[in-house]
Image (cartoon, rainbow, N blue to C red; front, side, top):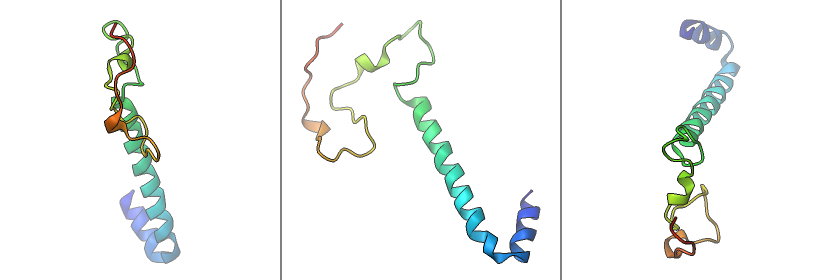
Length: 81
């Protein structure tokens, strides 16, 4: 497979950016799937921990980028169950 791609890139050098951006997109999608698999939003075992998000600390940053919210200064405003 790699030999075929290298042969095509030698014949048509305009395909090199295409191969690069396709590989970059596939890598980013893979990393995002791994992030989702280890996050508390995906339930792998419902019997032992049916609500894993209820055990998170209020200072846990839920978003990639928090523009206006400073998660370090948040205090717990919900009861323990």
